[in-house]
Length: 449
Image 1: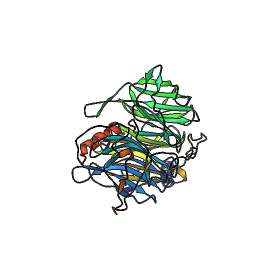
Image 2: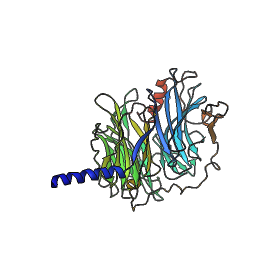
Image 3: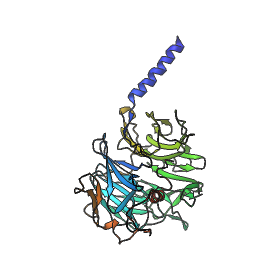
Image 4: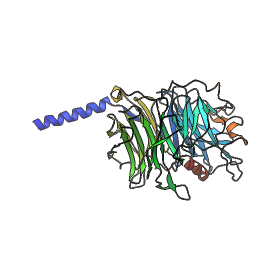
């Protein structure tokens, strides 16, 4: 009788936990090969924007926007014009302000230019800033108008919506040229992670170089010290909430890792990735959203024994333990996540798959540690002080909801930025597009792993 009662209690508790927690639902999917969302960003719980690529049916590739304005239905729009727009990372630090980094390719000359784009209405209309002189693949957001552009050979600071002089962090003369992410604490402290993969002639990752490092600056990036360095691992994400408490995520030869420190990096706790119920432990951790020092979501992907891609979502609610999120299915590799709040999140990836999490009060975990980087703390200068911006707006003449890039600016034949020559022609093969995106995303696009 006692054993039966204990069993009933366990069942009731499990049912209660399921009833209290939120649910994941699939909102959009297009079962076509070689299609993928590259990045997704939510401005509010009802407004989000994503960017991806798909075949055009004629042996070429085209890029697309996906948007929702009600949090439920998604509209797909082609990106049209002479310039092929390729964005590697989107971020919305507030309800109205969004940013994107990537490149544009002139389909006549095959010239490539690096770009930063901004939006003041939650990702509906975008503005192009003047071309960047360096390739960048990720935004490290401080607040609405202040950030670092990372993921290239240099760091480009953006102050009040304007790009400033690029720099390379150095310690005792040694440069760290592959900064992949940064986290800001207070007015002057910043943590940055450095890592680099070894690649073959085709741009495929074949190993990790001993360049893994976590750097710290207490004067806004002028002088640096190494919390650790020269590790044969590749930290890809960093998040600090105080000068002592933070997380890093990345990959090593043994597989993905997630670590926490509460003493500024002197010691680290390795957070275990539990084995999912229906798929293997993911071979990579691709993205994360950490709300505070106690709560976060982590997205991983991999391939099973049959070569099928899959994804896993882990939730943290106590600062150090991961639990698998109960998803309707784990099919396809999803590797981008965005959360405007603890109650609402989206994940996205292969086959234009978009899943939404709708949570309850039980999913909200509070923390006395304040969030660093108030989204409303920046000076509102975009649109008034940014020079040379041009709108990326719906082409009314087309009448089909497609997007066209108006005028010159980033897409013009002149100006700065990295350029590469190539054969003339109006089309872009899947191979050219894949190579460009592999370059932008450090060996990850459409492969899912």
